[in-house]
Structures are given as structure tokens and as C-alpha cells.
Length: 349
Image (cartoon, rainbow, N blue to C red; front, side, top):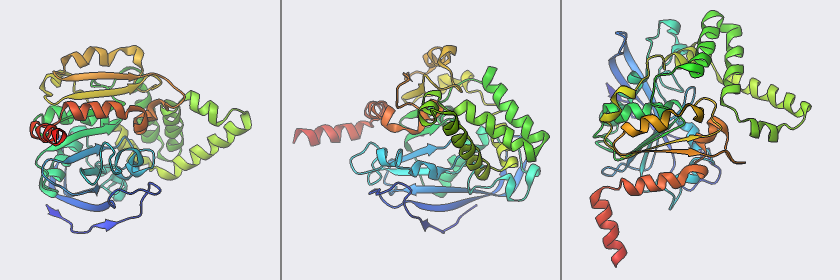
């Protein structure tokens, strides 16, 4: 293992952002062994950080399937959470945004191994992130673990694997059960399309993904006529085609194959708030999964956001303006005793 001392400051993705400049770096794990028995002599994890590590002020935010850590530097996310006085003020918190295995600038099949790349899963991804934090960045404890979609699912895994390592958990757009029913159907459609025909299958996979993760209300608002809908469709598919690689996408969706935190929900110790939206087709509320499973989380709470003119279906997970009040409540409820005592003393003056 070695920590590559290559920190590259890049321009803000969030226009006019006044939080500390983001930094990018790589952490390399030597002879990394995957759960299925495969291994790599070098596994590179790319990551972005904001702020400085001071005690237990680190916050881990994990992206969804096909995403990267830098996606959280958008105005709609960073601009709402990371600025001065905001909930995750980057002058107070040390924010870590990793690219998961198989994503972004981390090691992935398209780097050269193709389908000889080890078949990683969510347990491998979380284990590698834990080593990045502890061995690479010197983090001994996390103030908050959160993530969107796949990152939300990995938040449940984090809570079970490392129950004493965080003060709070907030999985977004996820469910703590094995992937079955229509959720498994749409993933199999994507996996089979990519495996059977990597060239033409990518287009089919993206078509399926767009339908499953979009919002009918927002699409109707964006494209209220046939011509506008056709234009939006063409632009959306072209953009997605340019941004995705068939073999990487195959591995990304296959990595959820054995996800199932339900049996170990009782191991989660930190306060947890799970947030889903009522217009999320990937995690439809009529299944009642969270209402049932949250009962097994000692300090768990489930929030179902109603459909409004602002929600974006599955993509609501990346709009903290809609759910930040629940993050504020979670941070307050999980505040370490010494922080609470300090705050009370400060308020008394």
C-alpha cells in the first residue's frame, strides 16, 4: 500500500462556491483480495476531499451506480450543504468523496483487464473505503456516513460492518433488503443486455436506466410536446452513451448481486435516518419495505418524502434542499456528548 502524494486542486463544479477548494488524490492498496477469491496486485481508489481532518469531523459521502465522488460538487448538492454555516460546512467538516471500485478514476475493468477484472461486490467496495479512510487518510471515526442509491445501500453495509466507527448514518434512496422483484428485473435487463452484446447492449441498458430513474412529472414539465420530448430523449441518450462504458457498467450493476443487509440490521448502533421519495420507481413505497425493516434498527427512523413539484423520482437523493431538515435533525440527535456540552456552554454565555 502506498498513499500517492499527488493532490490536484481543480476548479469548482459548484458555481460561486465559497467552501474550501476540493482536492483529488489516489490511494493504492497492494495485493487487494476480493470476497470471491480474486485479487489485484494494485487496487487504486480515487477520492476527493474538502476541508481538513480535525479529530472526529470526517464525513463520508458515497455515490450511486455509475457515479463518482465529484458529482457531489454540484451547486444543487455542495451549494446547499458545504458552504459557510451550512449543515456540512467544509470549513468545519472533513468531507471525503470516494470513487467506488469500478467507478470514475478508481481501478475498473476498462483500464485494461476487461472481464478478467475481479467481480467486486458492495462488501469489497466498503472494505476498500474503510482502508482508504483508516490507512490512507488517518480517519479514526466518522461523524456521518451517507450516500445516494448504491451509496445509500452501502451506508447500511457500513453500519453493520463497522458499527462503532460512525456517529450517524443517512442512507438515501435505498432499501436494506436483497434486490428482488422489479428491482432485480431491471438490473438483469441491464446486465443481460451488456453481457450478450456489449456494443448494442449499452444503448438498451441506458434506455432501461433512464426510464427507471426518471420522474414522470419532471419529464412532462421539461418536454410537454412531442417535439420537445424527442429532443430531450435524443440529448439524454447521447449524453449517457458518451458517459458510460459497457464493461464498466456491467460490473457496476452486477456488484449488487449479493447485497442483503436485512439479517444483520440489529448490529447497527448509530442513529440512522433512511430517506426515500414517493415517486422513486426503484424503491416504490407500496412495497412497505422500510416500514417493516426499520423496526429492527435500534435507533432507526424512516422518512418517505411526498411527491411535489420539486422531487425528481430516484434522483431526489441528490437534492438536499428537499431533505436537509432531516439531516439537521440527525446531526443534532447524534451529536457527541462533548460537542453537545460545548454547545450548551457556548449558548449560556
